[in-house]
Length: 343
Image 1: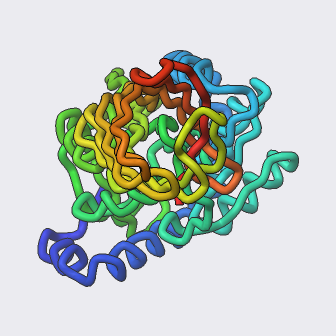
Image 2 (image 1 turned 180 degrees about the horizontal axis):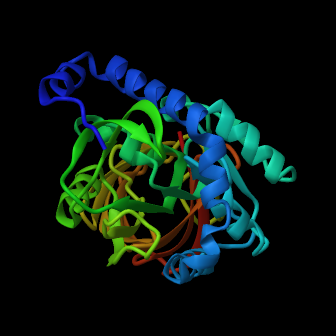
C-alpha cells in the first residue's frame, strides 16, 4: 500500500473544514465507484464467516422495538449488514455516498430502500431515528472534522437512540493509492480505543459498550473496535408549553416552561396563565424520566408546592412531549396528570 506524503495530507486537512470534508467524501465516492463490483464479489457473504459480528449485531438489535427506524450509514455495495438485520424482521434503510454501491446494493436487495447521499446532506427529521449502524464508514472522514459527522448522527437520533460504530484499530491517518488492487486516491483513518471514546463523549454521546476483537484470518491484520453509544436525554435550554392538564391543576395553555440541565440535575422556571412565577428542580434518569419538586406563586399570591414524575415521548413531528403525574404537597394533596410539549 502506498501512502501520500504528510505534506500532501496537511494541505487537505488545513482547507476550509466543510469544503475539505466534501472533497474527502467525494474521493471516497470516486474510490467506491471504482471498486464496488470487486468489493461485492469479495465480501457479499462475509457475515457467514464473522460470528463475533453476528453476535454483536444480535445483541444490538435485541434492545430495539421491531418497528424501530434504523439506518445503515455507509452500507457499501453488498448491503450485507442491512440484509442481516432485515432478515430479523426490522425495517432498515441504507445510505452511501457512492452511486455504484447504491446501484449494486439495490439490485441485491430490491425490497430495501437505499439512497445515495453525503452524510452532510442527509435530510432526515431531527429526533426521528431509533438506531444507526456504521460499519467502517466514519473512517472516511478526517479525524479533525469527524465531530461534524457525529453531530449529524446525533441530531437524527431520538433521545436514547443507539449508534453502533465499527472501526479498525490503529494510528494511521492519510491516503492510500490502491484498494483491492485498483488504483485510487482514498483517505481513511484508524483509531485507538481511548481516542474514539474521547471523541464520542466530547460530542455528547454516551458510551454503552466498547469491545475489541482480533482480525479474522481473511481480514487485514488490524484489530477491530466495536462501540455502542446512545444519545442521552438532555433538556438544557428546552422550552415547553402546556397542552393538557387535570382540572385541579393551575398550569394552563398559557403557561410556558424553560428547562436547564447539567449532568443528571435539571431545573427550570415557568409562568403564564394562573401562574405569576414558578420554579422547579430535580433529577433526570438515563431513560429521560424527570423527578422534581415545584413551587409557584399564583395570581392570588398563594404559594403552592408539589412533586412530579415526568415521562418523555417523541411526537410524530420529532418534538419532546412530557407526560406528567403530579401531586400537590399543599392544599388537599390531590393528584393529577398533564402534558407539556416542546416549542
